[in-house]
Length: 299
Image (cartoon, rainbow, N blue to C red; front, side, top):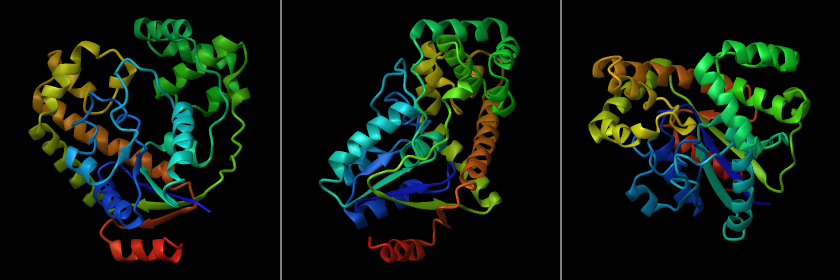
């Protein structure tokens, strides 16, 4: 049976370098499971694979989209499964790596068949959010779908807005579409999780942000600034520098906020991943043990 090896972990933990080593070992391409690396104009701020890394190992699902393109975990599931059908004809094992939790779950567990939101509904809901804030939309969700209202992260505006969109478009509660059924896949899934001690991870994150700034992140943000209202740019590293360009904070303050918000996101990733008992955890430097684990599983 073909095998999908999933290399996952929080941002900044060290997935990229190890993914290249594993891909070379397996003779595999790399599938990116990063929801922002899909956008061709977001390179530095998403730590997208470099030209040298892409030359060394073939990468898929990187730099495909325009900032204005709509994309979702459901689309990612569909695109990845289609791609795997082709790749498994060439390789008995394929590597997927990234830290976008819902994208990884979409491929490994399947995603509920939730209707695609029409552009007019999406535009109306987002306009209401931009003009009136989140509170009125939370009130609407509480009335339309009290079950999901009790479950949703009410500070995550994107999830709240998406639920409101579905309720409005279908006239049914968003929760009615969520079955949480794990779909069977015609391939084996092997998950390798990377983790570091908290202080070690946070120091790496701080250094990586400094390196991004040195590599030209501010110039990249300036180039996409005219599109700042797009959902694709509601992203750590970009929204903080937009605030700087708007004169709302100093550059030092913006960089400090990027570091802080990246650390917060890393904690959220680890909380999500730790719920999955199928993940085998390693320190990224323990390559001998990681390769032994792959060998134990015939890879």
